[in-house]
Length: 491
Image (cartoon, rainbow, N blue to C red):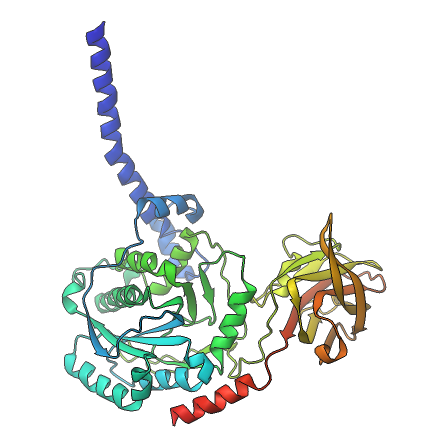
């Protein structure tokens, strides 16, 4: 009997040992399988190719824990870099801006891009950024000549620790020969995009500990004025909400913002699948694997593609972002807040959507009645200088607020429905479905705790609140003084 139990134990151990390799293979297969899942960003022709090779597309959300647990991607990639200009400062900055550049057959826009970053930033903003340029071309003569130009034009930024130029050694690159030709791309195209993935991976790896946030740009980009201030407003408004990637341009790998703590995983991810697909497609899968299902893109775009010739073969590339605005200083602050309404919400167009500057998000409710409300309760009282609210959309122009009032409140108390203000003052009435009030801080003597929209007459039409924009009171002339000092420095 004892011998029989021993033999059974051996069999169980054998089964357990034999299962581990199988499970490891299965998990790896599922992760790879997920990379080819159907996605709205893939062109229709490429969707058909994916459908022919994979009959059952997988859902990335099913493998989030697999990606997190299976891969220990928190450590740095072992790469040696050459410092071509500048050295990192010991103090962490707020934002790192990363650029990767290679020799182009036609045109070179890198110097213009660097100039735009610095020229469009105020003196105070410059203190909070560091720009890292990865010269990822193996032509050392080209690199040396370009570094000389960069050093001559931006010496004061290099000395101040705001500009670094690096290069990852060629010996650390994986093989770029015999790569998989996915999507029937020609060999040189596959080589180009595969190397580009590695270029970005090494750049991300280098930038991991330089700042709290990281912004990826391409080397042929123009920036809007005071883009950092706009970024900070958006980041502040997203406090308490989960995000992996925020987008400030709808083009390519331009204007994509990350937490710096996520850079090691993203670097490993790009390096692991460098030959599978272009980097902007890989980013979609990375975002999905870390549980951000939807794109979070903001308007107006803060960065514009300005290159005329592509870095691939010098082909023409006239892409422009029509949501780009040169001056981003007018972007609202929208302080962190809780939002409530007693209007019947349609599907998932909830109250938070109107308070967001995310593209194509808005609140949509069924016909409101007299006395219905939509209220914003700030996390802490604040001084508001300007309020602008727009209802309806271009394709649903009847779904506007026909009769309503805008109020601001104070003396908040806790109720069963959440924190609410007990005292309100009316600022004005809606006209033509919108309202804008300026100099609010001069008209109201108290710090505002609530902003409320009140329906003053029932309507048959549904209600869309497209945007709610709030500007807080800023220190007098701070940005103007900073801009002047920045201009002096850039001379």
